[in-house]
Every structure is written in structure tokens, then in C-alpha cells.
Length: 336
Image 1: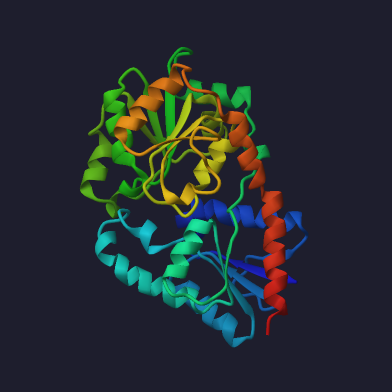
Image 2: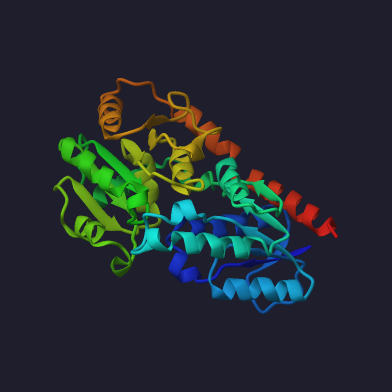
């Protein structure tokens, strides 16, 4: 068995969750001994496992089908998570949905990260078999490390007694960036850091203005940072706060859980079945609830759920994901 992992616009999407999903797939396949290639010109493969949605992706699917190859589409995207992102995304979302359906319907099998995203795709009327498999998490990479945590605090010149709240994501309204800043206004005693980057020309003016300076002094937007600084931030901050309104999974949530960090997320359907408020995470439904829980968490007035959260991350380790992918590949190859 040989798999062609195809990822269109790899450099453009490297800073997104989809970019990390490809790296996780490579690692997962290596761990279970499945041969794979990233060479889009390769012909000696059995399965095309495709992750992206551009014109070249459509071409790759059609080419694979012409040559009798099996096609697995990794459905990272839905109409729902396209909305409230780029300029014009809400107006274009119905057309985007039709385009996605056209792409996904060409596959022999769909993989999507959660039962929630599977439910959305089933609601589109797709008849292609759909399997929910997490994007996975590299547990070793996010183990708490004192040197990385100090590197994070040194980089931002954070005093030892200063409380820090972080989030990670693209500059999308959907991600809850407006709420993140609004909460920071209400809680000036804490430092709020939002890691991530999106080309400014692609996002609405109110988000551009917010990131470029229309925010209180206790909010920082350092851009996309990788390596020791972000890994130290995940475990060295006092809270991971992710107020996103819509996700197909939320790889950054898995990264925070793997870092043994307290997490506070919005109570949205994607977390049903794997995150539970007050058991392995904390949840809120609006800014009032978020503010109350943030203060309680940072004042140690709520139980520490990091061990339970880490166990959730363990269930979605890359090792486990590799075995699930292997099972789907074998099943697809045996179908006529």
C-alpha cells in the first residue's frame, strides 16, 4: 500500500490547523509503517489522500479517478466554518458549500475530524461513506518544559507574578477574536496574548483595525510564532482561552490539553462527546460567563482539570490516529 498525501498551497496554509494536520498525517503513517509520497507527479500509489480544495486539488482528484486510484478526501472544511472569516465569506458561503459538495462527492471515502463535522456533511446530502477521525496530537512535542516556559516569559518580558491568558488562531471573527479583546478590556489586570497570523488584505477592516492597534494595552498580537516560544506559552501561561464560534475540531485545543493547560472554550457542538464542562475543560456561552470563569480560574477558585484534559489528549495521540487511518485505507482498497 502506498498513499499520495496531497496538500495544495502548502506554504500558504502552513500556519493554519490544516497545515499541522498534514504533518500529523505524515507522522501517523510513518508510525504504522505505511509508505507515502508528497510528490504530486507520482504514479505508483494506490490511494490519493487529499486535504485541500483549490483548482489543483480538483485536478488531482479527477486525474486519480481516471487512473483507477482510490480517493480519500479529508474534509477539514465546511460552509459553517467558512463563514465569518475572510472578506466576503458570508456572501460566498452558499457557493462554497456547493463547491465542497462537488469535491467531496468525487471521493471513495471522506474523513472528517469529529462526529459533529460528520453530521454537518451528512446534512449536505452526501452519500459517500464518512469516517470521523481526529487530526491527532503529538504528545511529546507539547510536554511542559521549564526552559521553554521561561523562553516564553523572557520573550514577552512577563513578570513572574503577572497572570497571562493566551489564545491561538487566525484573525477571524469566527475564532472569537472580538470577544477575546472585549474580555481583555474588562480584565485589565491580566495580559492577553493572541498567537497567529492572517494576511491583512484578506480580512474585514474591523478585524484589521483591532489587530493593528484598536485594542487595550494588555492585549498583544505577536503574529505567528513556532518552536519553543509557543510551546512554552501553551504550558507556561495561566489559561488557554479559545472563544471560537465554529470549528471542525480545533487542533489548538488539543495542543493546549497536551500541554497540561487549563482550557476555557465556548460551549459549541463540535466539543460534544470529548470535552465536558467541569470535567476535562471549562466552557462558557457568552462574555459574562467567560469573565466570571477566567477570574475564578486565575484565582484558583475552580478545580484544576489539567490531568483529565491530558487524558483526553492521549486518546487522540498520533499513534492512535495512525491505526485508524490504516484501517480506513485497507477498507477503501478492498472495495470494488
